[in-house]
Length: 172
Image (cartoon, rainbow, N blue to C red; front, side, top):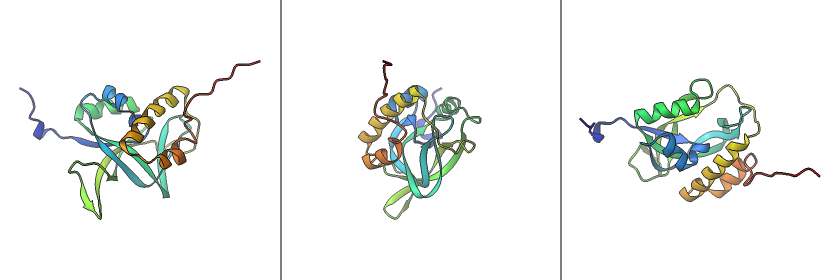
């Protein structure tokens, strides 16, 4: 018998790296649903020494991301994709939600929702992205801009690590 969708427990997930790319999320988590964008206050985005996106506390910055609803099965699939618990750990943080779903508590003019965020607490120094990650991040950046993440945010935080194309040079 099919499970009643009204009783399925869904997790609100905040993706800030290559999971900005909607196609990648649909491949990783077929039952996921994109619900809009949001941001974490007092965090900063960077590429870690592991060569993938990470976030860490910063009192003067914000991290924008894509927000999705995940089924239990999709959360388990995402855990595997993200390498929990060796690459990232799962945390819950308040995210200012800028979408249209009726989620979270109204705080001022915005809804704040406790969202699942994957964080690497071990590798907090900056590094360079893997070449394959640059491609995935650029696809995610396209979707992020279409969804309303400010271009100024992309330019300030992501572009110093993620070039808009990969330079290749031919030796003389």
